[in-house]
Image (tube, rainbow, N blue to C red):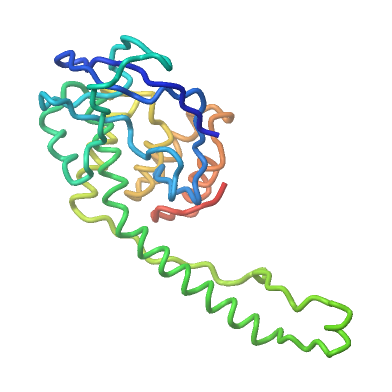
Length: 251
C-alpha cells in the first residue's frame, strides 16, 4: 500500500529553488506486467529515474535535493511539485548534464521510451496468438453438458492454456538511434565508467538487446546470486538463448 503523510519541502541542488514532494510513508511498486528493460505496465509508482528539471532550466535528480522540512505540518501552500521530464525532451539532457548520473537517468528513460514501439508490436502479436490458441481450444472442447448436467450445476469446460502452445513474438531490430543511446549507456555504467555499480542488471540487458551476449553474461556472472531476482534470471536465460528482444513477464 502506498501511504502519504504530508509533504517534504526540498531545495533543488542547482539554484536552491524550493519544491514540495509527497512524504511517502510506504510505497507500492505493483504493476500489471514488467519488462526486462525495467519498464512497468500500469505501475502504481512512476517509471522514471527521478530526473527533474528546475525552473532555472537545469536538470537534477530527486536524490540530490536538499531536505528542508517534512511532515503533515509542512507549509507548501505556494510551492510547486516537481514534474517529470517529458520523454521527447530527454535528449536535451544528453548535452547539458551536470553529472554522469544525470545523463544515465536521462538515457535510461530514453532507452525505455524508444522500446515502446516494440512493446506495442509485442502485445498485439501475443494477444493475437493467444486468441487463436483459445479459439482452437474452445473448438476442440465444446460444451456438451446435458440438461441433467445443468440441473446438477456441473461446470462448463474451463479454458487452460495447453502445454506446448505456441509462444512467439516479433523480431527486434534496434534503430541507429536506439543503438547509439544503448552504446553510450554501456560506456557510462560499466565498472570502469563514470557511473558504475548502480545499474548492473540494466547493463546486462543493454548488452543483450545489442546482441553482445558474452558481455551480458560476464556482467551477470559478476553479480551476487541474491541480486538476480526474477528479472535477472529471465535475462540470464535469454542471454543463453541468444535472444535480443525486450520481454514482458508477470511477477
